[in-house]
Image 1 (cartoon, helix red, strand yellow):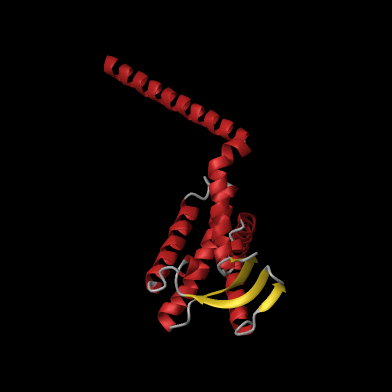
Image 2 (cartoon, helix red, strand yellow):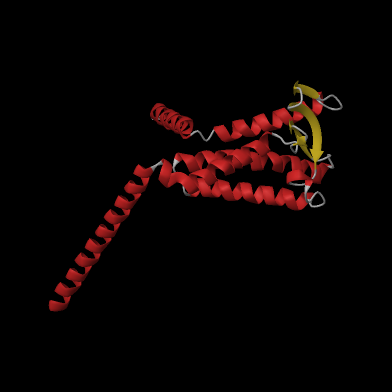
Length: 211
């Protein structure tokens, strides 16, 4: 009996691991870990030692940001940390609740944005709770005379996820016309089934009244 239970448990575990691999949920903790590791490496290696990767274009330079984008709202670190946490939880709940209905475009966007929001949440939490200097930024790009605001990988996840989401929502009908047709056919089929059910229910009600 114990051997049978062990085999059943192993089968369930293996089935769960296969689902985990196919679902790509593991991408989120991997992206989150990469963001944290690169931030700690930047803090350790780039302090007062910026590294020019491509002269006049790309530099690794350590900066701290207590605010949101472009250093805004720097006096509201705790509020920004709370917003990051709530946004992360909201997206995680949406992903879990709508998992079967969401297509892979939405899932990829949520994977990226959840990882990014959690990455910056950890930095803001460290800043609020332990008095660290702020969110660690280290990717600096220069376009001619314009210095693009320094950012980190978590910012990249959020930005890329949001851009993909916007493009998909606006242009999905053009990019995937077949999907639109399938959705319309599915809606018509559901309406037909609903009307059929209502007709059967009315017919049964009339038969009962006749009795």
